[in-house]
Length: 570
Image 1 (cartoon, rainbow, N blue to C red):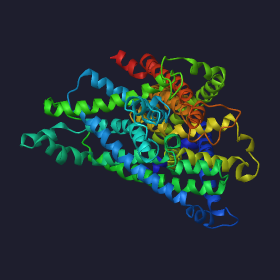
Image 2: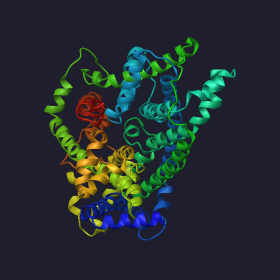
Image 3: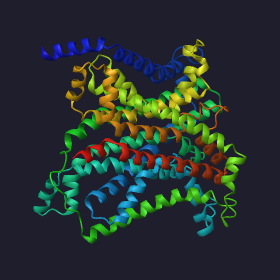
């Protein structure tokens, strides 16, 4: 009874606040128009293509040998990358949480965990080709191996594993820190070996988290477009097959059906990860540790684990260092010394580098604050408000996390190239910078929303209620009370959105027109042509921009963030 009355009172307050109602209506319209509508159009195109309603298009694409092969290839790579990334991530996380390390090893881990965030998604593919390709520094010029190829299944698997394992490492590190050490110490006191403790106590507590990490990397792997495009060779995956179907075969209905198949796979995995494993993880772990953990100091355990992790970390760093160094080689594959800066010069004098960096920077800079603000508004509505469409807003805003970029790109082509429902309305949006900004916003929205929800759940409701009692409306409360309290999350979402936008490729490569030059598209184009030095020059400048953005965000957060003010107030 009390709950019903409370809900009725909340609805009455909601309807009495026109700003809040308008915000909800605008949000629902935006999410429906730019997330649900493109996906719905893909479904419609899949069933009504080839002259009539039915499964004709699906039958046609499944009759294509390259498509069925692409599904098998994608699943094989996805499962292998998911397993390897989870195992390597677990190794790194276990060593950091359970083993006493030196400052050098700890610093290595921090660098490795940050590199995938600030770099384009295909940097490691470039490095792998330059180091181990047929004209690679290591294979051809050091080891004199001429009959080798990094292209194909193993090339994709290795590159994606090195790209995605830091994600597993960051996820599993937090879970391991939350395990109460007294549970493991009790087993040790009863005579169990460290291996027995790990397999009988630590691992069972960690299993849901391992499953979560596996599914996250599996989804990332099968949705990845850039790495298979550069290092895949003739090894087709679903993402690259969809791209070639629409750009090479000009088969939009077939590409839409292929996109629906890929979407179904990712949505199924996302549903398992979101609604089963996340709940199980929250119920299984014991929460914050009650006291400090006794770190492993035994050399027989510490030395091999630390050496192994350090070797992997140094190899990853070497792969990233190879990019700026490769941009300074005079002629790739033939002459490596003396180093030169001519490729950086050519980037700006012959290959429209200024336009590429200007367009990428401006579009990302415009989309970042929009994404950060939208994320905080959605988080605020989800956590602090009760209304009937709240579940819809939360679910649709998080849906973009499970939608591969290639699928979203095909959906925007089919949904807006002829206007809404092919009516011509909003057709002018297609091919403009505005549609690229919208794609950037949609792709980064889930990350900012999750961060905002976590931050808002820590704020006592009474703080905002006191502002309402003094006559402030919802807009004033949000801007003067709520947003300042979640300033750190807002700033983090701002820079994360900027970095994700400026390094994006899978969603925008199908939408970008000659009117706009984007850095990632230029890198992909030069890499496909074999102009690796030029691709490295573009990638190096992009890494400097993104890394500088992250450092600037850290400085701003330390200077103006809420955590600093709280610390000063103590």
